[in-house]
Length: 413
View 1: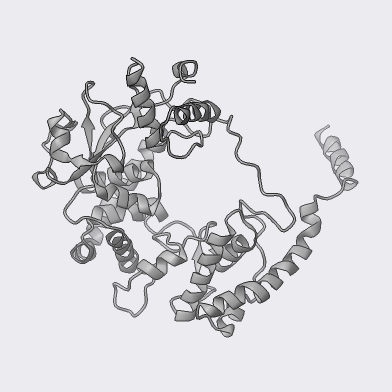
View 2 (view 1 turned 30 degrees about the vertical axis):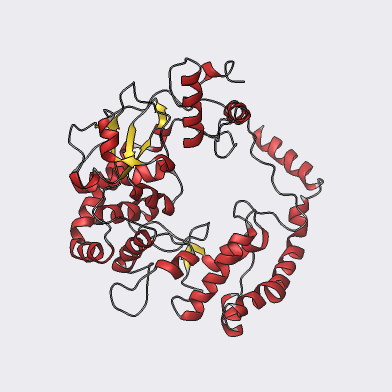
């Protein structure tokens, strides 16, 4: 029965017109080649790339139609995500304990293996080895992740027909500059489906800014040289503002009489001031004496419904690597596991993150109408939305949760 149904379906499909996209692929490929010759090549030459390098880099390169977020010529850009979908879940879902334990175990072994190199990197750039190893593990599985894509093909495809053409055009020209300088050949420049390169997963512009030759062989090889890859991560963090001898942050307990609507990098206070408000480390340890006069920032990614933190400016440096609070917390926790044998955050992630984006969006619009700055009005509860909500709750005699929940839908209009 299944075979007859399949045969009938195949017969039916044979008489249906092919999608316009499939019909136009050869034409689009021709447009792509014309774009390389008439648009990209002149721009690359202005950036110092020779005609010879350009021809060698694009020899045999065609579009990769399997990549996401493509908008071929003549096609309409995809509609914005349906705001009614539940596009986010509890922040706790990000912290898979089995995965963290595995990364920590491998990371501890590799931190020991490369201890001498990491010590030299920390001396040069001020970044602790455990933070570098944590990023290395998160980004490429300590260099073991497969990077099967031609970076030139990926970047060229996305520069020609993606939702972020300008950004990928800049990255493609940077990749050509790398080839021109002799850093890597087009054939060996392998990366992810997004064009990120090597063990640190640098975009080409980041490679040009931050990649270093730490093993002394004359080139910064972030694909095959562990010293180069680790040092490049350290150099990146240093250049982005890493503060030597400071931690990334601390899990804390915030008393109920202290408002949770005080989070964010723009509301920094000396760590001692937070301590004077009754905020303590959940481990029971004192804050390091070197931190007491330095800035700390409240972070409550699940509002009152999850772990609470005081973070340092180094937390926001980690976010330069990947602009996500949860990513930076993941790296910080993994680094602590590698260095000190730490475990999961002690406070539990509560039952949060079940709201529809459309509901959160409506709350954001209501808060904006009341004069609040919620950051991006996108249906996602970032720190400005969380603290605005907490402030509104306090002013209206409600318990401060600093996180959207269903009980607020009828109250905040």
